[in-house]
Image (cartoon, rainbow, N blue to C red; front, side, top):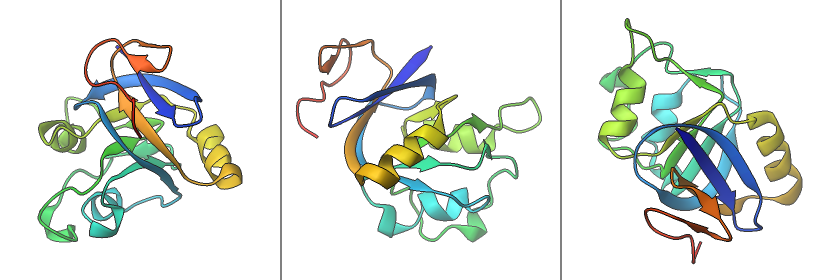
Length: 144
C-alpha cells in the first residue's frame, strides 16, 4: 500500500506504508547508522516525524534496556528500508503496535536535503490517498 509524507509547503514524498495511524508533527532527519530505539524513545523527539538517512533500520531488533524512556515519543518513522523478514520484524512490530506511522521506500536523501536547505517543516504521514491538500480517509492535514 502506498503511503505519503506531506510537508506543510505542499511537497509530497511517496513510499510504502508499513502500518500505524495517520499523524502530524515536525519533520526532522537523523543521520545515525544505529540508535533507532534510543531516538524513538528520547523525549527530545516529542511530536516529531523522524526521517532516518541510514538505509536499513531495525536490523538489530529491539532491546528495551537501551530505551531512553518507557514510551515512544515520535509521531512517525520514515526510512528507506526496515528489517521485515521471518527472522526479525521486532522494530516494525513495535512501531505499528504503538500506532506510530512507518513509511519505507522513501527517498530519504532528497528529503534530508530539502530539510537541510529549507529548514524543518511540519508534515503529515498518512496512508490514505492524497489529493488537493487532504487525505481521503483518516484525518485531514488541515492544520499542521
